[in-house]
Image 1 (tube, rainbow, N blue to C red):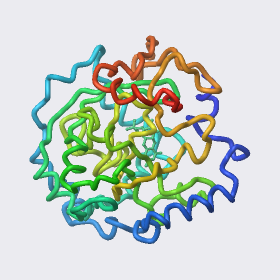
Image 2: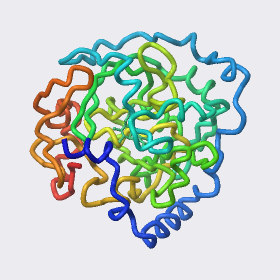
Image 3: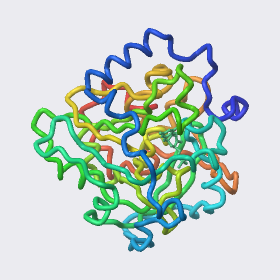
Image 4: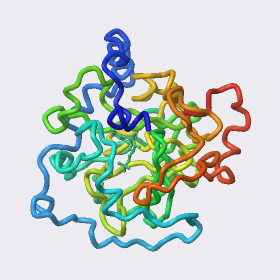
Length: 322
Ligand code: MTE
């Protein structure tokens, strides 16, 4: 597969963002009022519990499985999915551990601000105990054309968004990964538009499928999967599922997302899965299942059309596919 030869979906330096685009993005982030605030947020120190390898939320797992979410395939073995990750902050290879273990995930403050009536800053360990945790079996389809099926534990993104009471001007939920070069060597690579930024429309964020993930395989989330809090939006390409989120901001403007800013012709804002729309450099018709290597046809919206197609019925002029 072409992209394998390119070591994952590493973009050759020559195709990376020109400096001007990079600088414009910095100004955009500053305009959101996020730039300075992000550095180091939630990363200072680390509790004794983490140092000793105990997770303060371990008693919440395994959460009850919601049987409404079913798979058409076997769950990917943990050994396979936990050793094949995309996490550019730590590595451009799939082997992101042990580098990702350098991230201190406690204390971690979950922030939600911007166009909301009730901006919030809440400790992750407090938040999770107030949220309706459940386990869901989800498929995940990467734009690189591999897929996996994972038992995520988490709570609907809607629960967090609605708690903050978005104003009537709110249109997007912007989610960003921590930004700390001292911890994440990838963030020293200036040609990437750090911090990793993703976004959904408010309606997408309120869709029942949009899950904020805190655990996997019946345990708290390990770092390589995006601890302590990552997104899972299974009808979209995997790159929308941003890891180690901090902070969340509600905006009126559509954010420029990380991959869109790097290579807009290849990775768009919407990034819904569609087997009929090839990536400019490879087909999206099939996917390779991690673990077995089997190939099978990819489904429109990754098979979740019943739950999400309605969101896009008036948006046909948009480039809805990655
Ligand atoms: N989030 C951050 N912060 N950094 C990343 O490099 N990679 C994305 C997404 N979220 C990425 C990220 C991509 S390309 C994919 S396919 C998924 O995470 C991979 O999730 P997984 O490692 O749990 O399989």
